[in-house]
Image (cartoon, rainbow, N blue to C red; front, side, top):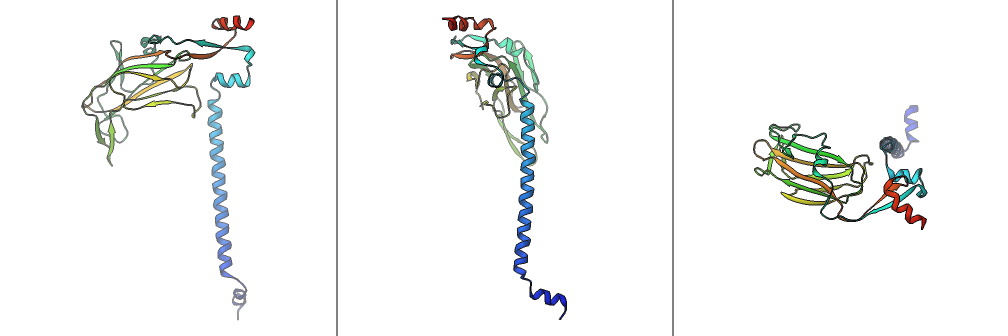
Length: 249
């Protein structure tokens, strides 16, 4: 009997198989742990990047004290524009198939603008304003009508002309709150703001079928204060006068 044959008599092949499977599992767990560490490092890098933007909440928590800040309460003013439509329209940026005419922002377009599509237009209007003293976005739109649903791409994908509104803080972190509303009808809409943001970003978007969906017209986009708003301000801010007078009493 050869040396190899003698050795096989003392080897448990089932145990060898078990050990091999255990080693494979250990290697897989190690690879998964490495991927988790890489992902965690990537997320931390993103957060570090966004944290460079100014955030008054963080500044208050980490660097400032309440002795340097005052809380100013702004009473509701009802159906009165704190930021007018003209002021909002003046901050338009980074739009798609967007134009301004006669005091209106018009979303139209005449050709396909989506990857892999042939007859679908992507429309978008974006504005960035100071919303720190406001509680409500008052938005007035007029949908163009026409074809409201269709298919495009290969394989086919369904599209519609829903009007979507997204409101958020431009310099916030990725997981900061947002407000989202889909399929707004023609008319005036009162949209509560998710926070009193100094760099409030308003995004209005819609898909349309080429030559068959009418233009979307934004005829009003103003900010109002329909509910009370409390805002932290520096004590050297003129608007903190009332707070300082009250503090001395």
